[in-house]
Length: 161
Image (cartoon, rainbow, N blue to C red; front, side, top):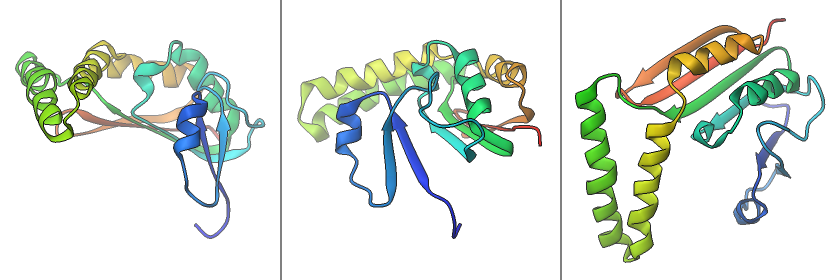
């Protein structure tokens, strides 16, 4: 929109140093301890990082603290397919095909290991029903999950007005 500002938060100073986007305030912090005042944000999003949070209850409580009443939350995450067959196909693709392609295209051996690690984090990620329960337990309303292609999950919620 026309008014407001964008704030990016990451725990890694190295990652923050790589960002070169004018007009975005960058802060070092974690999902469990956001460097923002109570009720200071109207929208909060997190993309593909849920698997790196050690305490989702604490993170969701923090999201709730930082959002204004009526504020919206959107969490994007790659989640395991609902079926065993879908999980097996995705596992083979991410642990086999993608690392091979990445190694060939990127020319670096470590790239294939990173893609294998990426699958391991997806496989170990918190289950979608648990995410939704944790959002409700943190005080959010209108908690919902939308799934695309069986693996791309969009969790949305609203802080009560």
